[in-house]
Image (cartoon, rainbow, N blue to C red; front, side, top):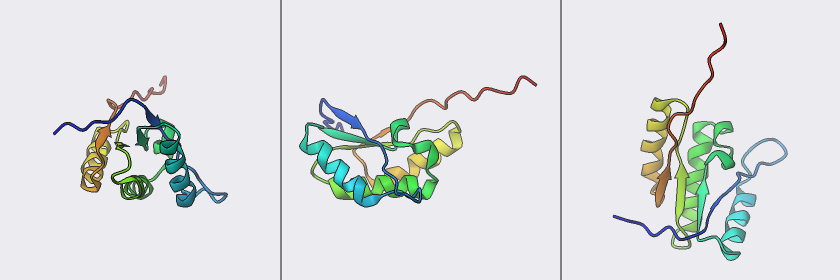
Length: 116
C-alpha cells in the first residue's frame, strides 16, 4: 500500500530539556508549528533528530508520540537506521508496531577502524 507523503518533509530535531531528557511538550509544539507552516510530513528520529544520542526506549517513545499526536494530520516517517544491522532490524520491527506512515533507514554506516 503506497502512502502519499507530500512534497515537503521536515527532518525534525528532537527537543531536550535542561536535564537532557526529551522535552515532549516542546516536541508537540514543534510538530504542530512545522505542519502549520508548510510541512506536509515529518521525519522523526533521523540523523537530524539526534537518533544516535537516544536510547531505544527514548527513540521509540519519540516515534510513538509523533504518531499519536499527528495522526490524521500529517504523515510520519520514522528513522530506524543504525551502524549495527541487528540494531536497525530491531528498531524497524519495534517502530513498525507503532504504525508510522513510512520508515527511513540508512545502510549501516561506516565505522572507521583504528589504525592498529
